[in-house]
Image (cartoon, rainbow, N blue to C red; front, side, top):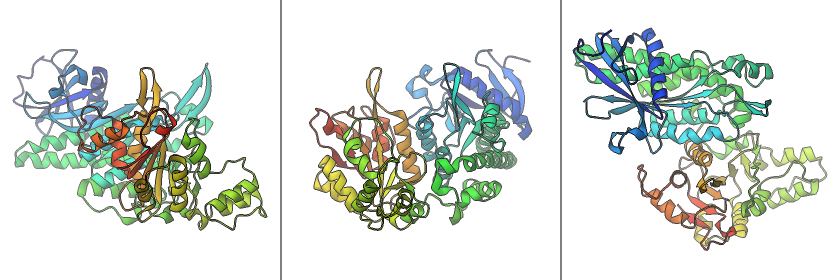
Length: 526
């Protein structure tokens, strides 16, 4: 094999940028291993061993994949972007020698344990790609385990709220966004434990990634060919897209079905979960590839209060951070499992419910408190496990709780209680103590974007209210929010990811900043 490309008349250039050169090579090797199944034939490597060109041929056309290595090794004008955050892989089509190229695919490889809220933090990368109509693949281990001092503490599964978010993104932006589940040594142990079932087997995940990559490469390749050659290449691209999409999404839906009861309880009987996975995948395929409207029965993201009250899940935010929110707000929005009967009756009365009395058993009191009628008046949520958002129909009572706790301006209070539909409340710490000082929480930032894509469309809620309860919030937080509002999708200096996502989601932001010695007001209308 020669070390030059001079024996080929023309090669289309595809640049592979990433967090490191190893992941760039890993991606190219996946395409080399499986691209031939779709007619994208690997011809070998040309050039230096450390940064070779991976050469491919399809229908007489040649394409070269060049691993370009770390983003930080390139000057700012030579780095590709599909949003404010860098993904593990960005594949670009460069149509001239001196350009970075147009991003055509983003990939995130996540090998971390699905523990706590770790799954959330990468979602903004997925969403930013969808906004720019760049196809995106998120890979995550189907099973993982927490190990302490050599002992297995617990097995973990991916949080399927990410996949629900991807379905919403595809419906909104019409661009492919899928999770591909990878295998690891914990898989068999997790099956024995019952954490995962064989229905969620991570089979040929590298092939799924390669199939998506080939479909995007062929589609982009066809754009620069003359019509006599482009039609066939484009038809092959569409065929590859259908294969990759159908296989990957069907597997994704099976895993979502496995965990929906705990991860997104109110959707456990929704057609997107109960219908045949191939039928559901076909509907999303037609929406993304053909531009067809998604059937109404699958639009789970178009909410009203009835969607939450038909299968009401009590709001039960759990936190340990000392704050006004913990002492004066959260305690008024939920009932503890150890609460006495007279406390349950008092809780019901405070939310305007009179038929929950101590004449009932404690279990009967809770059942009646959260039946479909009374659930319109009390804070409820989307899953039966400890949850992160509150849906509140009794806006007067909620407004009074906020007034007593934070003393916001009347303008802020009026905005909280105004509008049609219930309140969507998102209480988060927002800031954490990092080794170098206070830093915004990456998982919280990711969850804000998830909430925006799943629940945040205007018209579904009267007001969308974020409550930040960390005392580490900077004194100039309002100025940071205003700067974030002015970004228009581009990250500017002196702004950060958390405030940008909050500004995108919220109508009102309330902070616990008055719990510190900082002298500034606690609420603002966004």
